[in-house]
Length: 162
Length: 162
DNA sequence: TAATGGTATGGTATAATATATCTATTTTCT
DNA sequence: AGAAAATAGATATATTATACCATACCATTA
Image 1 (tube, rainbow over the protein chains, first blue to last red):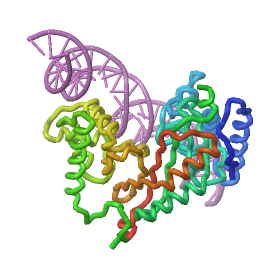
Image 2 (image 1 turned 180 degrees about the vertical axis):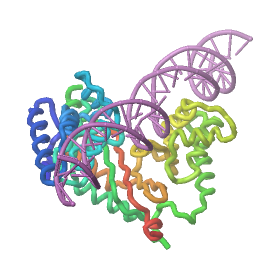
Image 3 (image 1 turned 60 degrees about the vertical axis):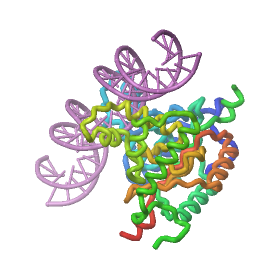
Image 4 (image 1 turned 30 degrees about the vertical axis):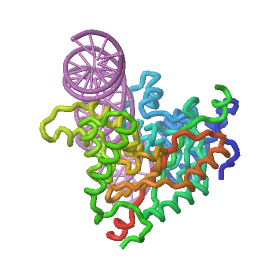
């Protein structure tokens, strides 16, 4: 379970560690599951992890093709679908974009805090939120399957720098 | 028979009442605010209210043009923007679609329960959810501005009819 | 080794969603 | 009536996503 005390990505963190950790975890998880993290898929994961800001599919495609390659949209969408399926990335519905998941073993989908200034995203796993949603669903007459919780706003660092 | 504090739209409700109420409220609200619910905007609101299922912009456009009219996409998007701005409809981010709001006076955005079978949506305003989000945001180091809470799943009626 | 079947990738076209921009009309205000 | 603002019309294009068909790769087994 991720720590929940002010874990919004900040300017000073060593992002190389995030990337390295994500790639290592992905390798392990794919081996465990007997699925293939092919060079293409690995490359897309790496591109998504270039920052903590969600990246659009076509932006990822541009990066893939930056060296003159000629990959087409279905190629990147297929890789993104694979990564989504295995929880290695999440889709941010309100942005049509994708962000790396730091806890891919942890299957259930989190809640996302998206800073309107720096664009970075923090993923939370608040039991309190999930339970409040369950309670509201029950009152409404509804069975929860796929909760989407995406909170736009401002991170403290951007707030302080105003 | 669904329980009494269950407000998910069901097959038996009189939808003409929903439509009528929405249009009357919209007229009043626009008058109060000194903005114009033009025939075009009113027509789009009416189309969105044809059901409790979110409607895509291009589906709305098709309905607008069903009589041979030649409205173009910007026309419907402009009307939708107006309706959004005044809280008369909500955008469902996870579906790129729009749904009528039954409580337009009530400005803050609700939480949406979306049935994967019938497509209908219920809007909730759970203080418990909002507070849980605020609490999680505080722990994360984040200031909430625009929460998006869209829960896909199954309504009880569709569950019972399986 | 070749046959087979499943998985992954390449490539073209097109669907679906959304906006920029410019023009014309209507409404409101003075 | 005339000016300013809001609304609507029209064309083009940007952005996001998928359908479809063909090819390549890979593992198992005959």
